[in-house]
Amino acid sequence: MKKLVLVSGSGRGLGSSIARSFVANDYKVAINYFKSEEKAHKLCDELGSDAYAFYANVSNKSEVEKMIAEIENKFSQAPSILVNNAMTDYVFNGDDRKFADQISWDEISSHLDVTLKGSLNLIQALIPSMKNNSYGRIINIGTNLFQNPVVPYHDYTIAKAALLGLTRTFAKDLGSMGITVNMVSGGLLKVTDA
Image (cartoon, rainbow, N blue to C red; front, side, top):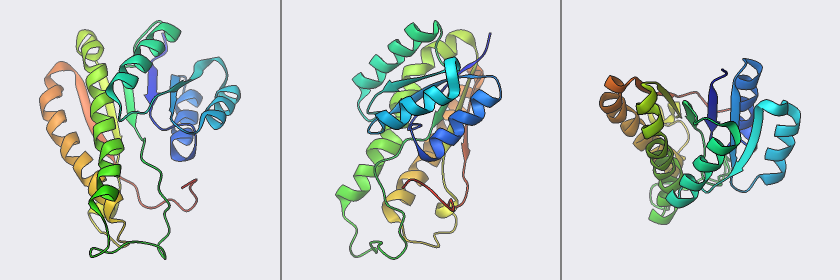
């Protein structure tokens, strides 16, 4: 049986590339979207019967739980692999950034709500099935900016740094159950929908 992957925020951008890669390597993929419904369904059409789109605002726990139930109903299995890729609306423009004396808590917490709280909601919704199967793979999408903040994208970088903390502490907690938690932290993308 093909493994099922849930990729959050995969209607467009990096998430859609991750979804394509999994399908190309013989996985089934649940494509999560929030505002990119048209792009998510277009991606499903492109990928065929191994991909299906599901709506949820991942920062909303009840929407996540509803989405997981819909995924299990559609595929007759729970995702055993989770890629936490979703993030809040953001424009990566180095010329239009806010510095330390300008950034607001609301801007930072907006990123924390999706990047950190959204990842927590998704992980906690899938722990029971992963634990029951003694198998789970959680992959959090990070950034190398928290190691070398060459561009002061403070809100984005702070949220990704918090996600690294979650990654390390959850890896320690869940590893004995056969559930691994890792982070992939690449550099800035040359072209992105953001």
